[in-house]
Image (cartoon, rainbow, N blue to C red; front, side, top):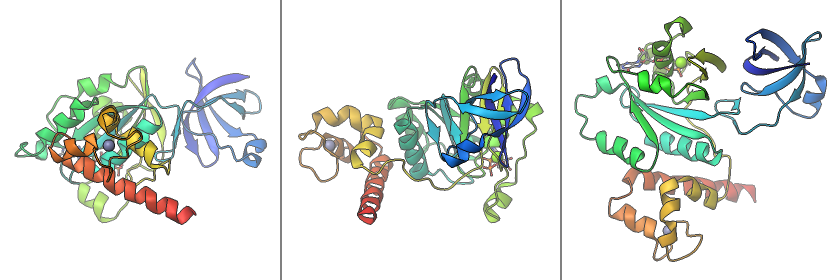
Length: 288
Ligand SMILES: Nc1nc2c(ncn2[C@@H]2O[C@H](COP(=O)(O)OP(=O)(O)OP(=O)(O)O)[C@@H](O)[C@H]2O)c(=O)[nH]1
Ligand SMILES: [Mg+2]
Ligand SMILES: [Zn+2]
């Protein structure tokens, strides 16, 4: 029996790499399908060298649906400031989902070269840094070495909308990757993704998944408390709210709402929180 890491899924088969860096293509056991267990990129598995059958999936530390990947150490939430315009709703949504899954977050804002005036952007960047995330900016002509170093010794994914420059960034890290990129007009116009499959690529001493872009994702929970806890700075301030378990909506004496009113919490972030709350309430209403 051999142990390995799944680095690619190819129509029902899986490419596995061992610690010795040998690659094998294997099929899952039939029993997996019966038990509705599907191996994912990022899984550590045991397989039979002779039959090339995956026998066991090791317990997962975490797993995401968008992108489909298991055992992530870090998620790079990748957002362009222009083309497409900065989508803070999707950023706050992804932060919440990734926090809930206990995966480390790195935020990368791309295409800074397209921003003539950074006046409106800078407070946004600074806010996400203030609440505890490592934030990087990239763009043509800007250094990316620090971002690349974040990949070392980790299994990572680059998540974000189509056209924000995920593949472009990975090509900068290692030009031998030769990932396909696409003109932004084409990417948006045809609604097609340049990147189709999720695959772990070797970058430095780490692994990176270049994933297809997406426009929306569902929350992996449907209760409001999970949502409020995944907004890390709200959670930190919630001790000052009058009521324990305050959801920071209409409750009197809510410290979070006061900070949002005073502009100490980024306005868009509190607004997105309210939008997500409504979405979850709607989800609950449909369920019952
Ligand atoms: N001006 C500028 N353009 C960029 C930058 N990064 C990427 N682009 C352009 O944006 C377009 C889309 O880049 P991709 O790397 O294909 O985007 P992606 O996020 O991989 O998109 P999907 O694979 O569809 O999810 C390409 O035309 C890139 O040349 C940047 O920093 N500045
Ligand atoms: Mg791509
Ligand atoms: Zn509150």
